[in-house]
Amino acid sequence: MLADVQARRIALVGRTASEDDPAVRPWLERIRQSGAEVEVFAADVADVAAMRAVVRDVVARFGEIHGVLHCAGVPGGGLFEQRSTADVRRVLAPKVRGALVLDEVLAGQPLDFVLHFSSQAGLAGLYGSADYAAANAFLDAHARARMPRDGRTVSVAWPAWAEVGMAVGSPVAGRPVAGAEWQVTRTFEPGRDWELDEHRVKGRRVLPATAVLELICTAAARRGLWPAGTAAEVRELTFVTPIVGDDPVEVRVTFTPSAGRHDVRVHARHPADGPEWTEHARGSIGPGRAAVPAAVDVAALAATLDEAPPVQLSSWIDFGPRWQVVGGVRHRDGRWLAELGLPEEFHAELADHPLHPALIDVATSVSDRAGRDYLPFCYRRFEWFAPLTARIAVHVTRNAAVDRRYEMDFDILDAADGRVLATVTGFVLREVQPSEFVETPPSAPTDRAALSPADGVQALRDLLTLPLPPYVLVTLPDNRALPVRDLWLRDTADDRPDPVAPAADPRPVARPVERRPAGTPDGAEEIELMVAEMCAQTLGVGRFGVGDDFFGHGGDSLSAVQLVSRINLRWGVEISAVTVFDRSTPELLAAEVLALREPAPADPGVAT
View 1: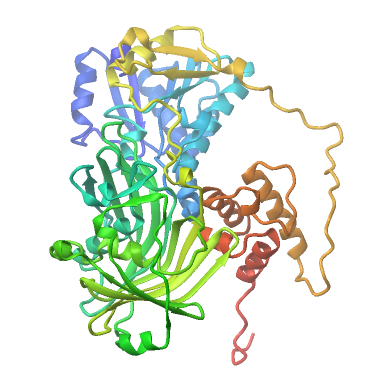
View 2 (view 1 turned 45 degrees about the vertical axis):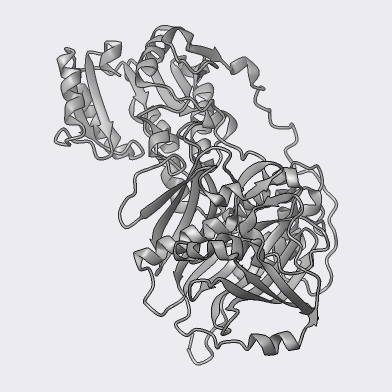
């Protein structure tokens, strides 16, 4: 790119840059063939000492520095509530710290321009990459802040690049697998795969959550992630958005070793729409119990229960013949027992589907939900002991509906001999409207078409020759043909509000404080008020009381993830999004924070 815009003396700086790198050598040769001089320097742009040394060496080699392209970046990605502080800092450092270091080490150089390579994610956010979006938003604000002082700093919000750039390296867009991390990918196609064709919501094909569960478990089993004779245990498998499959959809599961288990991330994309991956689920898998629970006498269990009406599947979902599996149902005092039998013409499928998605999906419907519609949200714990058989019995041992949440525990048994095939502890569903089930999840703010390197060179040439405002947005034409002449640059400075000046009297505004009962733990009142403020900010409401219900104000699974990320970052705790369903008021969440921050009791036998 630099050679293409007629740069003649070029210094390339990278964290691990080396002229001996086979991947770098052809590019250096191309630059030199264009008549330019080029040298490679290894340094981290966020390391001020290393960058001072680079500037000194560059000046010694080429003379004064007249322009800088700040292209450094690390792709983010994943549910923010489960991103560690170290993960986020790693994404922020090259852009945030890097920009500040460049300001410091280049002071005194006769610069004509400093061009920060930002992203449109900084303008409107990027689903699944909050840290990356924040890093780019900083570059935009930084350039605007510096413009009155130097008139030469510009932040350029690029769209996704084809073939090169962060979108290619992002975990939300197909990054390469590193180290011990590994992936499996399966493409589901309408008209070929019954998991889509026989599970339709308002006419749209939607992959059942149980198909995702099966894909995770069977891939891990083939990999041998647990000893023979040991159960597979899935924990906190949380579903963020459904996977809609009206056209072919690729589903990718990434397994990352972590403390004797594997963290699991599930992404999907529609190849016809572009390269972007969207995160749909996250959890972990590892070895469970070595001992299989004792077999259950299904006939004796049935004798303790009363005959009940058949299981009612969701009326707003159109199910195919594989879901027509329900036999007799019995019930008493919150316990349910249902026999499910896969139609005989589908028995052969069990060889390829040891956790048959249709059987498990119907199993999750065995209970009385009073006609309310629910969407799977989380498997707190799923243990898999053996492949499902054609006839199973589902024993629901606990079920409870609380506000917009429904939770149940159940065992899956072999109907013939009572063997325990799987157990579920804490299957959580959230109440939804049918239309919400198939809403398209948020995605990158740009068009799905990507900027080719050739078009990028033309845009960069314009950027280096035109008078520019501090913030420039590079957009793609709607027809997606991407001819160079149709690329255009737009100054968004006039569209942005001026910074808000600090109030003349910066004292905090008084707000009503609810008195807490005697015996409230120290700090509880302050934490409750802060959590209430976080709830208000997350949901965009004006007022939120410490006793108000998060979901009563319009909260959902995505906003629950956002809320717990704020809480975890503020107090350094590890609260999951499912906790918000259990403790959906600031008062209850504050108590959870206090409990997690409480130091472990000292061992009375140890002197201190």
